Length: 277
Image (cartoon, rainbow, N blue to C red; front, side, top):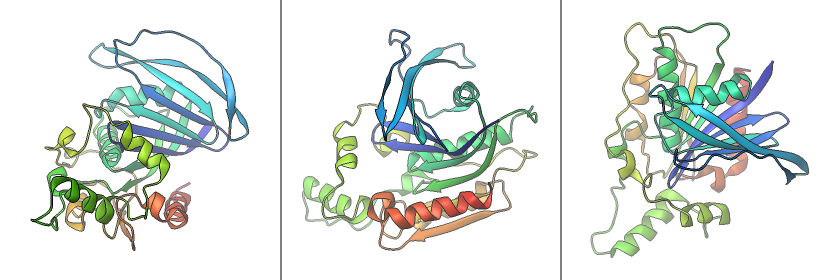
């Protein structure tokens, strides 16, 4: 039985990203548009002093469409870059193909919306059997329950658009002297479709249907200065169908607490998941 420690969802500018953390291997994958030519290959390279394998998976959706999923296996994370936020059977197919049996979900920013919608779809499924992959717990980090509430309220009236953007980034996005290279690279490679809050500006979380099964125990976390405010995460408690929902605010952090205080951030996630292993 394959045991996966975490599955992480994240959106960095234009992509919805899912990462599956394994104990000994990592896979990085992205969901390419259907028009992308399908080819097959495998190769090995070096990553974190361990071998990696690369190839493709074919994912079929209920509407009959098929997508090419490129994956990269190394250690200890599986990252799935997903362009379509309506996860559904596509994600379930990926989990099945990777042999995942038990896992923890982690969603950063709009990736938290992905995680919630996936859990809701499982809870409302008409058929669930014991052989299905099982989510043990979930963490939504800086994930808005209502995207329209994510706008900053303290922007100066006399500032230019460029100055407002810089102020917003410094105060609410990443409170560091300089943006970390990896984060800067992600923003520099922003896409043109799934970009910013406008991509899902009308999203408001809703609870699963009456009679749905219980969703996994979950934690909602955010930074003290996050543009995803307390007002924005408070409604999660009314839409989560679970007995155990915990809230945590990271002092001194904004939207990217993973970079701002990585040690504390990692400890929070690891300790929470450990409770439900």
